[in-house]
Image (cartoon, rainbow, N blue to C red):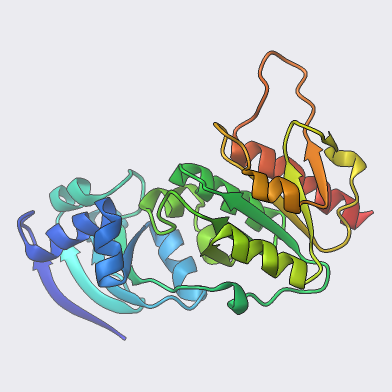
Length: 261
């Protein structure tokens, strides 16, 4: 149900201050159970996947129209919109959305699933980029173990271009994830340089979890020891690693290639 609540022209309005706090502070997102989504496309994808909109801030001068979707609608001026928008080019629509907490047992995986696991991911932009690639590659779930960034950070949503809403994303401890994968017969492939073989020489047609560590320290020993195989991407230049989102995309699409043969 949609209804117009008010028009806001002051940046000191409590609703505008709360919106900014939700964008900037994970503690406020947890306290209120809300996160921020910018852009008409992203908000529409959010609705399609069953998320509940709390408040939608609309700037008709930028969006070109009123908001006719669900949620409590607040009209804001272009000056206010430009002040609160986390990024440009978001079509004059910003929404506060109720969070949905998923657990490992909520995942409904098909036979021979393809899963991506990120251990201790630090940068929201990297997580968002992995989700974007995971959506494109048809990955069944992304599991974030021992996260060092908030899954509902605005930059996760932005860099995923809305894929955050299409790929099931769960946060948990590494020990829980390892037990879950083994219980479901999903092979664990850790991306690492040491004691590893080339990724394209590894069979990914069965149920597979691709495990990625941080760029600075890589994977912890518990993942390396739990692995069924260690895989690596050949590095032929002067650098010894790729951005984690690039590495993840390469490995995801190798699984896609093998499964389509």
